[in-house]
Image (cartoon, rainbow, N blue to C red):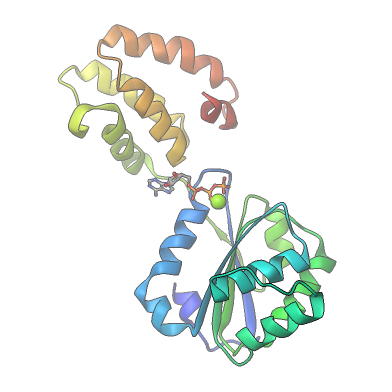
Length: 232
Ligand SMILES: Nc1ncnc2c1ncn2[C@@H]1O[C@H](COP(=O)(O)OP(=O)(O)OP(=O)(O)O)[C@@H](O)[C@H]1O
Ligand SMILES: [Mg+2]
């Protein structure tokens, strides 16, 4: 937020990428920041574009206009679109979120940035991406590498899902097994929430142990790979 609110920088429009693996909370963080009251006051215009696989200049310009006006643009000719875009951002300090970007095509990035240059100094583009390469190509300042939840935060989230009213059970062994499982979720919120919800319906120590040793161990062979856990 400090960075986004800082207008005392050289370039007119700067790009800050948020990087992290799938499910870590990049979009959630961007949303929180986007909706902050301070941002409302600081920026003349706030624009949110879900990019995903469509890193096509025309599609992105269309989506920016849709975000600015609240409806899809009617005239889809590129020069009209660009004109309309300039009208929206010229001389305005804007915050644009490009959510879930995959393209590391530097030419495409350059030409998109050129279209967005006419914003007032202090305009910012926040990019969320799983790929460090995308961050490297798009950034004008160092990317923010999002971390997972720490052990305490992970446990607190897990408890809310796995136990009735979020209360730890009396059987301490169940708590221990739970903590072992949570540690292997690598601080990734949806992994913790999903596993927690699965365990909500298991009551005995035996069931918890069997989940950890059978279902969970199968999906968690590779220490660094979180996808199998999410698949479960
Ligand atoms: N700090 C958090 N505490 C609790 N839940 C969280 C937290 N951060 C994210 N989540 C939840 O985790 C899920 C995934 O978050 P999000 O969609 O932001 O991930 P992402 O990093 O954008 O993933 P992707 O790379 O797939 O776009 C969402 O359901 C979100 O509500
Ligand atoms: Mg996302």
